[in-house]
Length: 150
Image 1: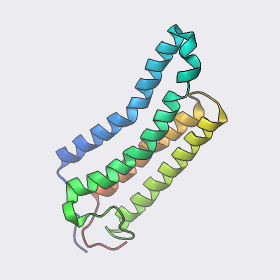
Image 2: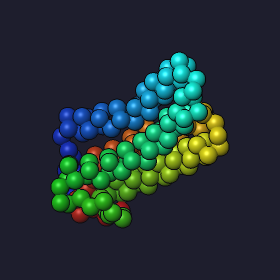
Image 3: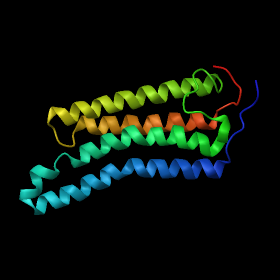
């Protein structure tokens, strides 16, 4: 088994910073809409679900960006979006953990969204799971071994 050909630390750090920054935008949107809603009562009904919907979208699509685009950026043509049991044992485990946490986080946020609560505990918990999942997926990018089995 070949040792991992790891991306440069600075490049991975910049990639991680960008993705974690994107994961913070729902909270900025929540703060902004809370400010708007406090000054505009007629806007209240129309904007109340915007932060929760944006958080759900970010939790789902940022890991897809990390996995798909990040893999291509760091590994080029050796990376495919779907590569079951390839990349080394640790890579496969961190992928499994990451995607499982993304799924649970998205389900929690969907439950919150359709449950009628505003920006509640389920959204925060789902977003936190999204952050942890992002870490697992970033680590899987770091530990990808070209030609390695699971």
